Image 1: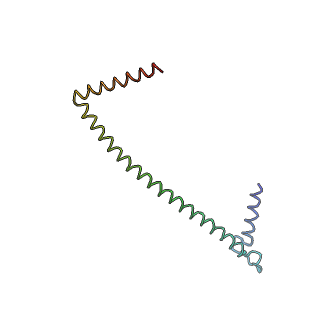
Image 2: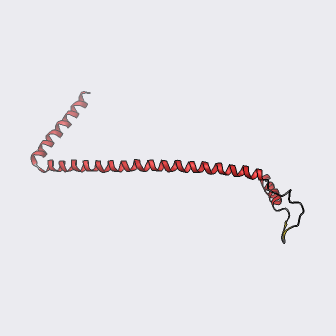
Image 3: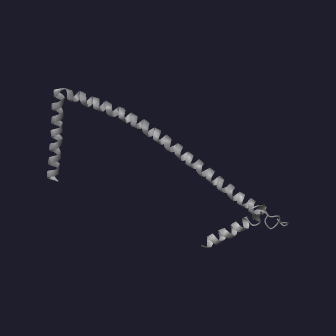
Length: 123
């Protein structure tokens, strides 16, 4: 409520001397002139805010660039890993294509399972 009253008083002080037909003729404009010192101070405040925003946007830009570089490196490393994995899968396919390799894999897998069973029983 108080801010509304202040708004009305500042509005009336801004539009004091203005009627519907235009500006009232007044011999004394000195009471209604804008104080240049206050304007300069407000302008300096605005300039400081603009400088802060400029630095902030520069920092955001640098952060985005560093994240983009990191994502590019990760993408390249993922492509390299995908190549290694596809090579490994090709080798597994070659191993399992022959019957002797399948028997060897079955033998090794059964020894590993047997080892794990004995380990858990003796523990």
